[in-house]
Image (cartoon, rainbow, N blue to C red; front, top):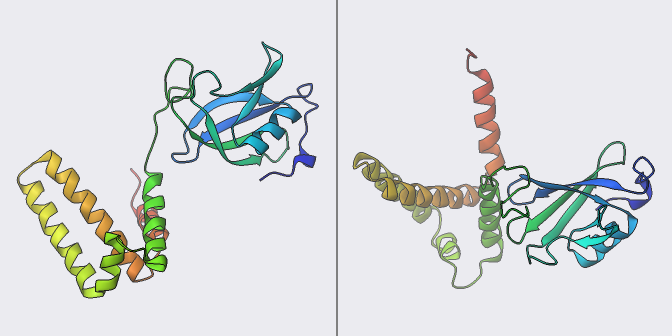
Length: 205
């Protein structure tokens, strides 16, 4: 969380811009303004709260619609005069019913990182009744076998040009690949970095 003592409210007469970002997708949801009281309430209630310039009063986002913004983190910029608020939206953020006030769509690619972290946690905690736990108990050979099976099923689905089956089989393949990486103590970030470096080496036309 931020160091509140560093924030500069003077530039906008006691207010500070607050840009809200979806913690799950990194999409920009909205821009609001906070005064010191709004920030304090946001931090204590974990519900993003603004100062409404039109109503001249505090405003908890979602208090009438139920579409609250659940606080995850707040960061200040280098000049300490703007806030970046990470939140979990409990429904559409815009009053028009749209996901974002800026018309952007949610990008759930970040979920892949979250899924991998969940699988790593399963490896450490081994909760009972979990399919992932069972795979880790069965060991390396079983995990590798499952990756092979899902790869073959993906190829068959692609050969048949069955869109629904391709999506399902690729999802299964991704999951089992993640289990294999976790079992071999390879971070998903290492795969992403390797792909990034390879892409940088490609000729740019």
